[in-house]
Amino acid sequence: MLLRFVTSLGLLALVAAPASAQSSRTASAWASTVSNDVRIMSNVTYVTVNNWDATLDVYTPTSPGPHPTILHIHGGGWTGGSKESVSLRLLPYLEMGFAVVNATYRLARVSEAPAAVEDCRCALRWIVQHAKEYNLDPNRIITMGYSAGGHLALTTGMLTPAAGLDRQCPSNDPLKVAAIVNWFGITDVVDLLDGSNTRPFAVQWLGSRTDRVEQARRVSPLTYIRKDVPPVLTIHGDADPTVPYSQATKLHAALQQAGATTELLTIPGGKHGGFPADQQIRAVDAIRAFFAKHGLMPKAVAGTAQQ
Image 1: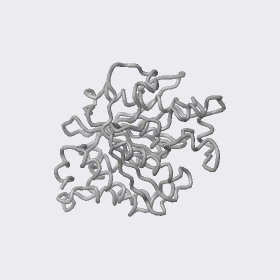
Image 2: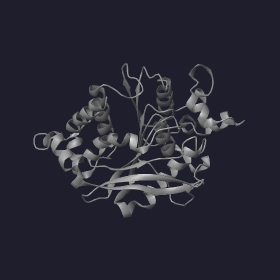
Image 3: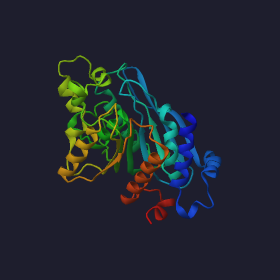
Image 4: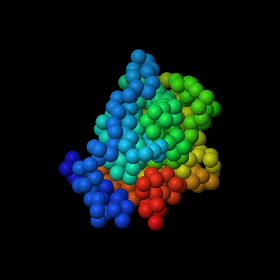
């Protein structure tokens, strides 16, 4: 499985490279020189809550910036996972020239909902406040995540201060996201608490509180639908056994109805990630096109990517 995944990443890097560069810069060449092109700062603490340090890794190109930045959020049903578990998923975006901030957050065993949402909002604020130090572009921040991380990418980008979920890291700095990429994320947490779509990880994250339905609604992206949310790209397999495909279609339909910018890429027969190589490449191609459409590609490749 690991070999297949790494091979897929090699194909992703080759396909993602601009057409004019493919003859002179292969995926192998990029992999051989990436250590010279990207600076890594590991395990930077961005907030301390409940005597627990939330950390992130910062990957920044050594080329002149400021660089458009992806806030990258792991999955695991809010109960497991780690930033290290998704580190190989960064490669296509590093190859494109993005800076990437790969963040961890409080899991259910440390703090139940809405802790993970609060932490990811703090990670976003950290990017804004440290943009100059790390050569990041605060006007071109993209949130991206997988499964529960997809949910957190959505809430991080869609929440408003009125939600009251920014109190762990209060500041007057405006939190603005340029786009959201949601890989098979949860959009309606209430739907996963009871009935045919009940998922143990959602039940564990909300705990046994008496107001769990109210809290689930509070942390559901569907609660924050409005016309002016950032552009959203959702990628979801229509045979996903973990997060129902209906979670994606409900979000897409609601955003459309509100007049927001939304795209849905369906992976036919796709499960919960682990897509076949051709479908994974198709997804990354769609992300590149989505970024180019909204003027988010790094300057070094923006002209070629938009042709």
